[in-house]
Image (cartoon, rainbow, N blue to C red; front, side, top):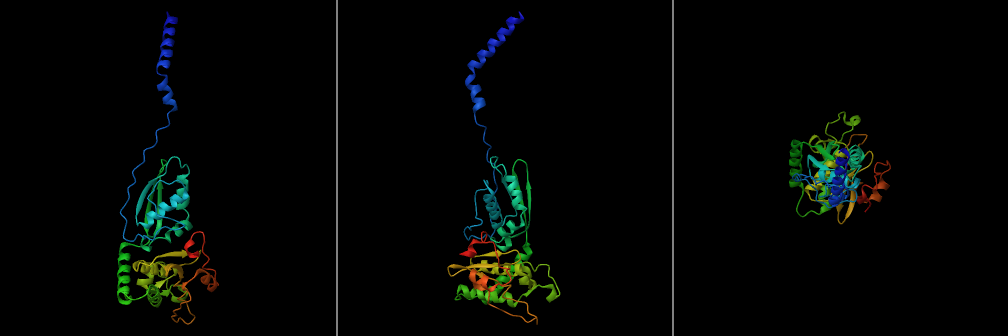
Length: 305
């Protein structure tokens, strides 16, 4: 009797395998169901986004599903350039090293600083906080360099200076020269050995335009804000120990270094120079004997044009 039951069970199993063979084969050979794309919420773009076009180093993107490191850099650039304070995107499963690449980029101060040079100063970051999950969700929280109160105070000063000094019949070069002169005449280089003080905000435009003291990054941010307000295309170029403006004027890129045009003198006398006013990069290199203008040519490609 037991043997009969066993035979019956075997026959039923064989019949089932034969009858449902197509469904069984399909179950084991069908491709895995693709992960449904998760919704990415796009914040509102703020008024300081620079619509200058794309650059060799980074480009604006509307694709927030990265496939490589360059895509990640473009996403970070777009987040910063758009002024977003936080943003979440997702690593696709086929990009196996995505989370590691995001971490390596966001932990690399040099890369982030280079990206920062291509955005409006008011959208630049002080720090970037990166959070991620094992499922590939990446959240970036941007801690801005400028507060809303500082932006308002700087903007009020910028608009006042433009209203009082910029005329409709001025050429683009004359407009740049007017602002160049204003910043230098109203700002002292914040060298503790010379001034006896070190201002907290001398590293940004607030120090230059409100406190009257700045280091190179303060001069450069202040000039960039004026250039953006005047709708003159510009970026910032940096070396390991210096930063200055690069301006697109009369159909080509020119260097503009307010820090070097406002030299510190032994007598404390205020000096206004034009040695680094709208000069070609080869001229910039010839003038600079300190090596402070030795920038990365693979990053700031526009300076080579």
